[in-house]
Length: 347
Length: 185
Image (cartoon, rainbow over the protein chains, first blue to last red):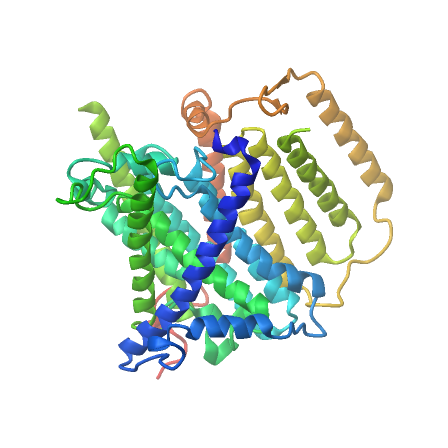
């Protein structure tokens, strides 16, 4: 509670988080272009800077200097609010994420639920963008996007719930601390409770759909819808949508690592030769945040890998995957979790 | 004036502004946006008062559920622009009567309550409202209402699925695999 009494510390943390997310998004776009290039046996961006490292920085400068184009038939107010709302909802989700023990801006005792709730606001922004653009491709893209997101929120929540039944708390800090131990990797939730591995697979499939990424990128199907709900956007507002997409990928990956893969703990607890960090809280924070972000970024790369590997699904396949496979299996996993806890109580 | 009181006033004004927007605008999407602002600010006041679980559920149920459904309905059934609500005082006396009745009922409920101000924030706090407390209460003392509500929701779900199902006369079913698609090769 000491942190909360200093009002400007929250603003400072917000500023650092924004800078971090923006830098990560720059690197993320570059990584995506490189990953796609390597998968397709190309080189990707090579001209700007060594190995094309400054390509995305140049791109973002170009985007920021572009003219704001607002279609004359668009709803001016909603058109302007929508990208802000989409980005802010994802950005607010980061406030409840503990990056290391004690390193969290909003230590909520229902943190997991808060993150799920706040990112569902993104949907309102997408609908505003699609409707406010007054463009049929944007509207169809928005409707597709929203129906997909609200469908796949259910299997994602069910998968997390089966983990929550095992941890017994919604507090992300406590979930992280529970996975500590001298055996490292073996204390991670997905290893301790093996039925959480299929739960993670369900969650991962669902977050691919929630971030509108291939094979679930129907809302942005270029051949049918131009660019989906952000067809009419350009310049900084378009940059905000891209920022929100990459930030959302990272946020949902961090959530997966926190709940399933040992949060900020390293897979090998005492690496020989490593200095003892106990007592140096700042060093513990740096190492914890490093492990958490490292594992999360691996999941982000995995999402890019999948995007360039699998073809897009059809709308009917999308709904069949969600309602006929992911949801029933998710319910089954919650049942296994509940029985596990019952056995644990009565033995 | 501490920061939390300032935040309380910001949220309070947002609720009033959102409500006024719902009442006075002729554009359905603006009305929905006003509702969004109101509902979100109410969640903010819940969280500010220490009822974090209630605030989060407010966002999930009202914004993630009710409001999205409303927006979806409006967008799928109305033209995108130039379509406004008809002007005029629609059932004005009835509306005023209902509003006064609602206000009286709320005042009667709220005034006699015993509110102790939170010493830290100076904001009246009714209850701790922690998640585990609510969970334990729901599965012990309030188990019967909880189960009844869940049964009601299940019935609604089954009913909605039944209504959305195609009639047996038409064998085509969109949710099954593509093998029974009407377009045969």
